[in-house]
Amino acid sequence: MSESQTLILASSVLDRLRKRLRFSVLGRDEVVDLILVALLADGHVLLEDYPGSGKTTLAKALGDAIEDGGDFPAFRRIQFTPDLLPSDITGISVFDAETGKFHFRPGPLFAHIVLGDEINRTSPKVQAAMLEAMAEKQVTVDNETHALDDLFFVIATQNPRDVAGTYPLPVPQLDRFLFKIRMDDISRDAELSVLRTRQARGGEIPVDLPRVRHEDLLQARLQVEQEIFISDSIHHCLVDLARELRAHPQVVQGVSTRSLVLMVPALKASALLRGRNFVSGDDLNWLAPRVFGHRLDLAPGAPPAIEIVQSCLKKPMESLSVGTLQATD
Image (cartoon, rainbow, N blue to C red; front, side):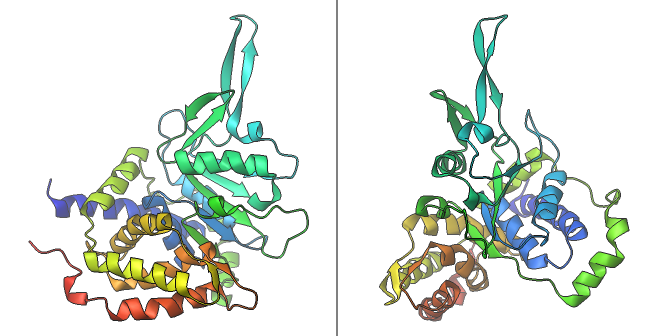
């Protein structure tokens, strides 16, 4: 199979997911695209939203779009609360009186797609368990390590206005989220469409919107990593952007090298989403504020992080040579 044929298959997987999600969630096209980029880039997403903004519908639609693979369900939801325990999400060891042995009973983290609702409402102990799962795709219970699914993908939410009874997410965990996406109100026309098509969208998914196989999605991840070209000019631009952010007078702590590493597969997934086999400056312009914004520690009185990222991106983008972006035979 040639490279172009393989990318056509990966594009087909992405296109099917995109159509199913846009059928189920109206007025959130860019959010859908960012979710798909994160899924293909093997990242996780933090949604900053208000109640009723469609986060659960979006996560359920994504889980429903993927066929079950192995022993894991497609979708699980975790409601984070202050009294939640790590074992409530990782699972517990249960004693079997007949055999005289302990058996592990998996928790809700053992799924393809996990929705973590109000993740900043839970204690640091639970946050630590989530960090291990997100960083290493495994959980440790009673000194035994249990592997999560290769597709393991977290969509977490937090309410921007709800500060009472919350625990700020630790910096290492924020750094594990590829994107932080703010879900603002949808347009008037989109809200009208939600009301008009409510009954139709609540029934069966049309047959021309088939599910995606678990194995095909994992294969698409691999092909995006291997066959989407990224030039050294993009690497230079990323490093220069990071240095500009670290040197900014209103940035107390800049972005980590790990965030640059996580950015590369995201840029490749963005290129595939836009029908290219190479990364361009457009991908960098689109993703940089969402990848780096939530990783910045700003001084008091500083402008929004997204504005700082966009400002610091101007100089590196000027030096980016468009002629060297595509791979040459």
